[in-house]
Image (cartoon, rainbow, N blue to C red; front, side, top):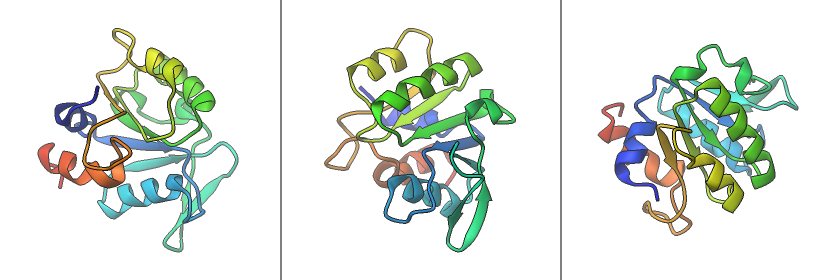
Length: 153
């Protein structure tokens, strides 16, 4: 299970990415991407179906996948995809040496957790029950506290 120390470790990375970033303000991929931008964090939106996503009237170039990140070994990744897609994202992340993943509520099932929590897979995996929200660990609810504890806010 994730802890505050795990969330703090996730935010110790200098770079971030949001898998499932969207231009649609009603979607959590949009809200999470906007959350990173609002805090001035260096974040790359990941969306294989669109060359860019818009937040606050500004377009941000997307990467089609994690392999397109310039520095994956120093990039922690928030994931906002269905569990079947999340599983593939985790496999790619492991191969690239991504240090931390934040599995937003609804993005994981037992197979995803088995993959994410395998020995040596990631330095930090934030997921599941806990945090301050009623649906478990969520960047939108728990991110500011973790950022403060990581001395980035």
